[in-house]
Image 1 (spheres, helix red, strand yellow):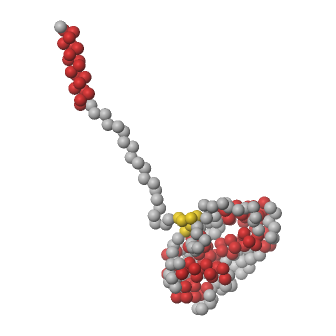
Image 2 (cartoon, one colour; image 1 turned 90 degrees about the vertical axis):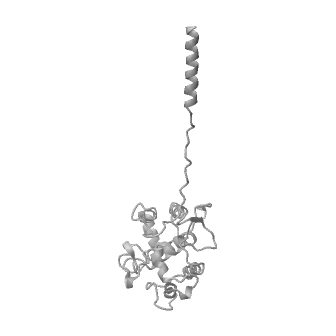
Image 3 (tube, one colour; image 1 turned 45 degrees about the horizontal axis):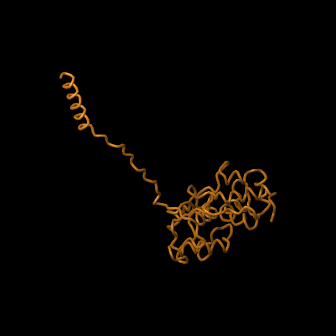
Length: 231
């Protein structure tokens, strides 16, 4: 009888404990992806001119170099090193109503004083304004990078003209580097300044804006590897 009573009390205790102890499964909160909605990066479209990729390096290289419209000198009160500053002199949708573009094509002051921009550069600036002068950017590393047919004139000169030549030309030759011609580019290719600059291992170039894409850097490397020919 005593053993039966003990067994009965033990069974009651187990039931009570089970009824008061509720096991809740561990809840792991879902991780929310970090999305930059303030400055989305698109895949580059050939029909769009992007500020960060094309316009900013073009302006920095030709207008915001040391002694002109950089953040330190800001000649005539103009600092053209960022979108917020540049857009002050641009009328979105109206190229000829934009002070910056009018100067570039010589309707008002002639800028840059070292020489006019190429027609391709002017066309790009015109198209960017016509498309709304947006603070946009794109990633051109999303597609294949062709380094099999790299030539100096077709592959590298357009990049140099847009990103580098405004600061490194016969008139300014910032850092004693002149990229006006093949011989000047060859000099910095041979002494390591070219790759050191565009990869950021030396003084990071371009000074403002987005660095060269990995594809463009690969083209410079391949050109040097193949003998840095004037082709």
